[in-house]
Length: 321
Image 1 (spheres, rainbow, N blue to C red):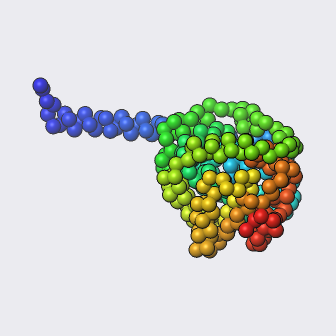
Image 2 (cartoon, rainbow, N blue to C red):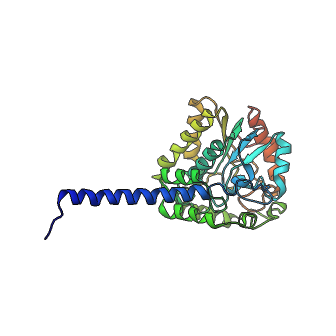
């Protein structure tokens, strides 16, 4: 077997490094070119499920909401205007449908601040299952599906340990041009409806569904994002309030563990507040299905829970504590 002299080996390695560096520079240049090409598009919450296209940059909001679809519904179907009217301030709703968990919430909030936006108060509308399931966090394939490509977000995905398939799917957003069509809510008008009856079988099926996706070992991993969110909010001069959103099944799996965690965090952290409303509003008239508020439920929750919280007061709704 013939070996190359040391100088030949070094020359070969140097060429490889230069080649890789040039290709890396070209790739970064291309990504920079595509990054932020759709920042000037502005859509309303009635038009879009996108966070980037509805919030923009260098703006101030009286409140920012985080959560899953159960938070996003507060802005769907024209309900965002009602929400801001009741709260008496501008609101940025960064909640994500498709079960956006703690990791997606942190990513969207950090990008919100990176864009120069500011807020007085961040409210995280908590669902217990996001503390236990990968499908709501690093394996969530929905929370960037309607967001334009930003190099800043790509970097957050890489540093945050998101899997390759999530990163690849986000890179595909470079090719999207019809953002009003891509980011449109696919089921308008649901908040005008009312749940006909609370079906115990449906609730039990929901329990079993979430239990099948739970891994108790994930609780410690995702709980750390509570502290990361708190640090981010406090660094940006705002307060943060966690609210366990009403669920028609008060003994929902994982709710007790999450309640204990948030109670402890709020007790030891200045500027952090927590309220548990999981047992409130157990009336079908406030829901359009077994998990989501209808228009009347949104108005009641905003007036009796969100407004007092933003004013530094406890909710005035029976069942909250």
